[in-house]
Every structure is written in structure tokens, then in C-alpha cells.
Length: 275
Image (cartoon, rainbow, N blue to C red; front, side):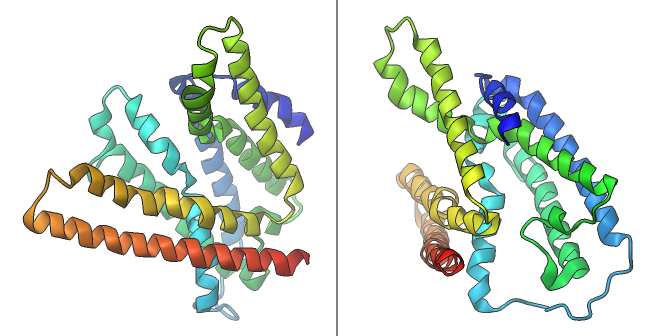
């Protein structure tokens, strides 16, 4: 981890989102290649449903729900990506870039999760690469995943850095001659915080569930309905307005349930694991 810290800092020094796009593209290609290797090991031998549970218990569902939210954590990058596109209208719509890309991503998640469980059953780890045999090809897949995450890291924290810098710090340093130096210091500090968390947290599965429950259930599910109601309240009426209110209340209930139940159970699992 210490070896990749400096390169990670350097890639996060890229200040424009459009210049980060090639890195993210390379990372996605590498990740897809690693998925191919994982599927090779999953299907190398005939699969069997013997000894596999067809469904989990109700108490296990909140952790699954929060893990899914974490897996789709790029919700915070959606609007900045749309804003910096040459043709933003291509981003939305039923056949827009967002829906097409999300369909591909969700399909990969479902396939890997389903067939991975059928292959390894109850012995499957929180990261499926741990289940891979100690062979050269399997180690290559692990390196490919690490590279894919590495090249995408700057995209993931772009919004956090952008908000911290433009909304809070930049205003206080507007006339400073060292403004650029302070921006690079901020970017370095944020990367260092993520580095410390990666080193300090031994159980990734529990942490993923907790973050999904705490932040992503609010950012991805709770807040959008309120924003839509605030924006469209005086722009809609009649049946459309009633349907919007009903739909958003239902979404908020789901998000609130995920937040409360998921956070409670995640904290309980962490306490039972370490205390």
C-alpha cells in the first residue's frame, strides 16, 4: 500500500475531470479483463446447486441492501459527468449513456455474485478474488483489479475534493499567491485519509455495509426525492403531482429503512466481531 501511495497522490493531482476520463476508461478495460479471469475459474469445473441456500434470512437482507448501495457509490459523480459532457442530453433518457452503462454494470454484478456463490457456497469471501487458487493467472487477476481501482480512484473522490475546494477553501484563498499549492495540499490530504482507512480497516465487508447504510442510502435514495419535489412542486399539478408525491414517499421510506436498519445491524456486526 505504501508503494502505491505516491502514484495515487500524483493521479489525484489531475484537476480537470475530462483529463481523468482516459484513466477511468483504462481502469474499466482492465477490470473487465479481470472479470473474465474470475469467470474462467468459476466455470472451470461444473457448477452444482447442492448445499447452496436458495435465499438468505430476512436479517441478512439489510447488509445485502447496503452493500449494493456501496457498489453503486458513483452516484455522486453522475451530475459532474453530465455537466462536463459535450452533449449532456445524451446522458439521460431510457437509452441514454447512464441507463446503458448501469445496465452493463448491474448485469456484471449479478452474474459475478450469483455464479460466484454457486461456485464457492458458504466459503465465499467478501472479495471473491480471495477464493481464487494460488496460481499465476489468479494473481494476475488480483493485480488487474488493483490497477483498475487505482486508475479510477481520482474519479471517485473528485466530487469530494471539488466541494471542499470550491465551496470552503478557495473563497478564503482567493487573493493568495499560493492558492495552487494549497489545492495540491488538499488533494494530497484527501488521498492520505483514504490511505489510512485502507490500512486500518481489516474487514472490508463490514465497512462496506456501514458506509452504504450511513451515506449512500441518504445520498442516493433519500435526498433525490426531496430535491425533485422542491424543483417540480410549482411546475406540476393534478395526477402528475400526486403520483410524484406518492412515488417519492415510497422511495424515502425504503431509503430511511435502509439507513436505520442497515446502520444498526452493521454497527452490531462490527461490535460482535471486534469486542
